[in-house]
Image 1 (cartoon, helix red, strand yellow):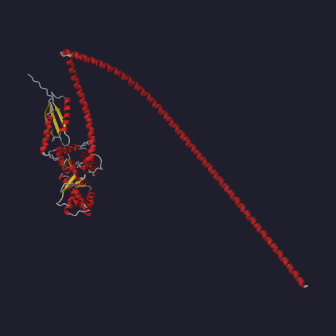
Image 2: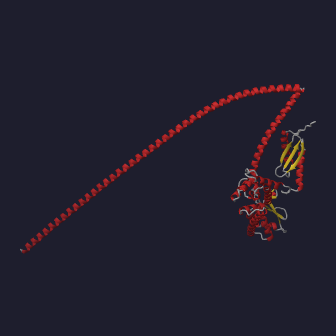
Image 3: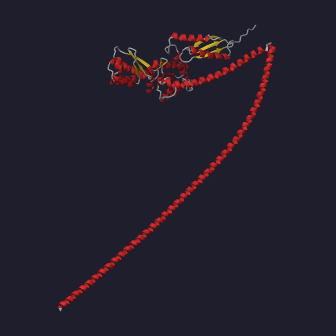
Length: 521
């Protein structure tokens, strides 16, 4: 009985425990379902909130985009409105311009019509004058026939002679005009070409002034050693000096040809030293050429300073001394340009002292007047202008710069220095013997000039002055008229150019003197 009771109690406890467990499980499931519902509700609320935020942002973005599109449309409209206004303004200006052009065209037509009327009137007046002139000529012929008792043929001959003289006078005037114009153009063209090509670019000198002859020592293999194996020595020498070595069939000598006189002098001295030393190979050639180049630069500075001292001037700027010294290796008509510059400086000093001018400035202008000839071909323009630019950069005075620039009339002279430099330059270049011209040749040229001028009919006397640079011809006034004098000058110039050889230019001056003599009793 007790076991049954125990079993029932145990069963009741199990049933109670199961009920409790069931209730607990159900409560937990309800709690979990409720938590899941709350979480789902929270997610829904969050999604709804985010959807509202996205919608709000989308509305704001759409509003901004709409505002921006509106502003762009307003700007485009304003631009179109401004463009339309500008087009209207241009159209108005064009209409105004067209109206003004129409007015000018109308005015021009009126002027043309007025000019036509004036031309018709002038043509009518000229026709009347021609008729009157023809009548006057007829009356003149009749009067001449009555007064002189000449026939019509004789009167016609006199008239033709007078017309011939008038035509000759007109032809001479036209010829003088053409000659003057041609001379002006020729001088300008010659100054441009010669100044650029010859005065500073040494490539236009004659063959004699571009070569140097080297006497070789005795030996059959000297030329072979100069040439070297496969020509390497001669190529090295030409590359180092910049000159051309000419080895021809002439025994005992070679020629060095180069346009730059300084380089040619360096090559000549280097070749002499190599021949004296006997060692001729590319390395030795480069050493000797470098050594001679340095010594030549020192020589250039030394002779430049010596020229300044000889002219009696204080030291010049180093750049000017160096360029001035290069004139020692340049010649003009075989006249050394550095000696010529010193001579011009001394002449300038004498003339300036006579005129009461600044002697130092005059000497500086004379010494430096040809310094542009030592510049290379990269400095364009006449040598006087190029030299003046160099003097200006080196701080020379304005008077000296203008004196150098104007001594060949490339610029108008401001003061007297330009005129004095031109005169001293002509004196130095034209004196007998200045340009390797012997006294016999000089006298022969002067005699030929005077003899050639005296062969023309009507010439009374002829004198060659200024060292043969000018020919003055005195004519008989009863045989040579004014117009014939111009024709005589041209004929003399043509004969001199065709028959005589002379340096520079010869000026021809024909002098016709009219003498009126009457005896009082």
